[in-house]
Amino acid sequence: MSSAKLILNDKEFEFPVIVGSEQEVGIDLTSLRAKTGAITYDPGYGNTGACQSAITYIDGDQGILRYRGYPIEEIANNASFVETCYLLIYGELPNAQQLADFQHQLTYHTLIHEDMKKFFEGYPAKAHPMAIMASMVTSLSTYYEESDDPAVTKLNMIRLLAKAKTIAAFSYKKSIGQPYIYPRNDLSYTGDFLHMLFAVPAEPYQISPVLERALNLLLILHADHEQNCSTSTVRMVGSSRASLFASIGAGICALWGPLHGGANQEVIEMLEMIRADGGDYHKYMNLAKDKTSSFKLMGFGHRVYKNFDPRAKICKAITDEVLGALGIHDPLLEIAKNLEEIALSDSYFVERKLYPNVDFYSGIIYRAMGIPTNMFTVLFALGRMPGWIAHWQEMRGDSATKINRPRQVYTGAPERHYVPVAQR
Ligand code: CMC
Image 1 (cartoon, rainbow, N blue to C red):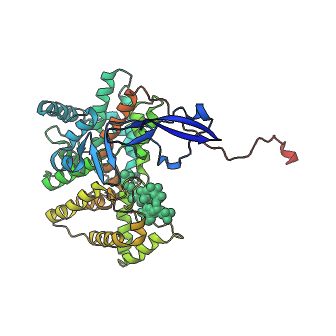
Image 2 (image 1 turned 135 degrees about the horizontal axis):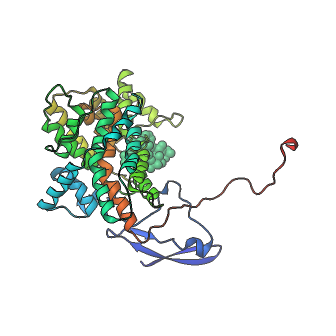
Image 3 (image 1 turned 120 degrees about the vertical axis):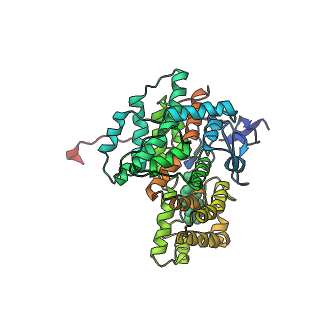
């Protein structure tokens, strides 16, 4: 297959076809407007390929997710989050020396400029940590110079990965009115983050290996997901030559929405609402199916996965393990399992291919870890950081990148003429 034909107004036009390394077929319509005068119409971009990418492969029908060719199950079971960051950004798994150097760099760039701490003081105590996270990441560009020099960009990628967890932890400490805990160079990436989140100056804090392992896994599961809303935002903003920090700040804002990364917070709030209402999950299943109601079953459905979300499968499998190891019985888990069981056999959900997504069980694990609900999406952002960086870098290095500028089909008033106010 090397070309596709389109007939418009009885005229035939031919377009080249590109085939990806997994035999994905794309019709190259870059010459469509020039040849035909027409544009494509695809709201939500469900059929539009905006770029060629070598980072992540998803087959939604088969439930396949691979980072740089490696199945998510293998990475999740064997790698560390830091190793995963290296893989996504540089394209290959690091050898022992490369990993040690990378780990060292991520450790030694964790401090944020002391003056930036004053920013946190300015936010109200009830500020959502996602708003703080987005503003602080964008603000990094005011302290750390950005330029087109590849060495500067490389350093800024490291800075962003290293400082993101300090920013995330400080935003949490701000929200509960506790003193900030500074990063420690003797701890692992995940251990250091847990320490900054949960330690208090008055007491020694013992990092739980169960929490460290669970956090490592959840960050890996969130590390990349090809052209989703936030990653496409990062690429789109970056296509105007906006800086790394500005582009990723925009991506964090896109992730915040309840249909995207914000769903993990919404899932827990939904489960809590069901419990407070007497635990009648059947009522809410019916509400989710009722087209006159705006209620959705949060944590269900996905634009791409139409069989199962492999991340959700891994999450569900470790939920019992983590809760068991921590000795926690969470009634919300029972409600979640009941909702899933009904949905998997209910014709509404089966016909629409709606399955639990990654956000359905991740919130229950975060909750068991003692992480407050409004921090869940911040954790998603922390995990997605290497994916955003890898895509920004790939987009910048791709000679086919042009400033992103979609077209539209105008449906407003035809030309008309101004009438002075007294005559209207
Ligand atoms: N509960 C009830 N009905 C649903 C749901 C849901 N969670 N999701 C989709 N549907 C229905 C929808 O009403 C539509 O029905 P109909 O064909 O009768 O009009 C049909 O299923 C197709 O849905 P859609 O909205 O056209 O699908 P989409 O691909 O545009 O949206 C989605 C995907 C994830 C935004 C959507 O499924 C949803 O809103 N889910 C809940 C929010 C959520 O969990 N988001 C996290 C996604 S995974 C994390 C991430 O990577 O962002």
